[in-house]
Length: 122
Image (cartoon, rainbow, N blue to C red; front, top):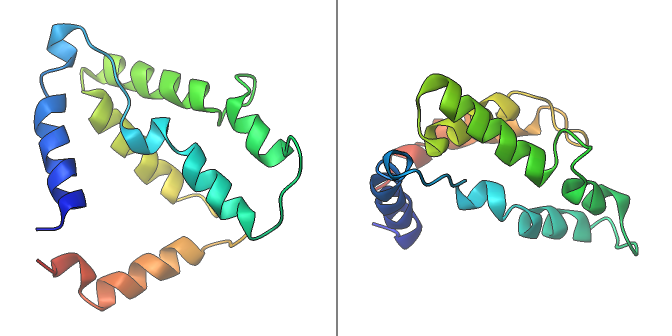
């Protein structure tokens, strides 16, 4: 089993018990997303204080890291679910939105991976 899959499985097991201990958390793919955002923007050129990057740190933007974490916590508390479940639900919801640059390319990629049986590899 690839290490990244093992890490996700272990985290899911540990994460189940955190809310009952009063510990709020967000999964790393939400909290650490700036590395991905930064790398994704590199190919389009870098700007000082790039507004496309800075907005992720601005709590007035609904898609900011702070607002995303708040949305995850609010959903988790409202549904009595863990933040991991809420974050996955939010990720699934956002994956349905067209990408601002690539449109529906995400759906094409997912369909291609599923057609190749990528998700069934062990």
